[in-house]
Length: 309
Image: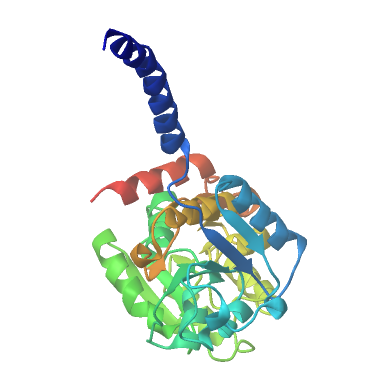
């Protein structure tokens, strides 16, 4: 009996060490590993770089990119797949099958979604908006141009639905939305009428109004009236508008990383990225006699304001 007790006592430390090692292994192992599939119609370098960056952020998951043309019908994919669509053809393919896996859609604007979906929203599809949030753009104007109150907004048949939302956001800020419909981009009279009644222009992300054919007329006309244009996006700032908010690849990777840490049932139906930046055009600011936009400070101030209730 004594010998047996001594053997047990000698064996206990070994068991304890093995138990501790097993517990450490269990705690360090991922709770689950997800199959994440990215797809797009175009298999370019930018798409591949985005997929690689996501894979680096999620080493415990199986992250792959497959061109859209090589995929079966959405319903033929495993139900456990987390599907990420990187362009509009991918969304059109996904909408053909209601039984597809949970899906995150990037690079889609509010206007593009309305053109494809109307007022409906298919199940198991989350839309991550690419256009700057309207409220954020209005707060940008209030931050860099606090003396301006009349916000001129050109709109078309496709973007008219955004006006009511704009007014709802503008009212608590003490801003007035001055809308002007522009059906014929070859007719400058609506522009001149809007310029006379506005302090600043806010561009909506409507490609029928803001595109390579209209950019010269819009910018030259606004310069002539000493009227700054804010938005509609970061690309237009490079062309000659004053400033805009935007989210870059790192911001979108942050969004995806956070969402993929949660089960698809908890994914929001629609989402703007929480993280963003501000871009300004110093040359335009000088031409209009406006103080140059401090991109970092303004972005930090806007972000702080969004955190407040």
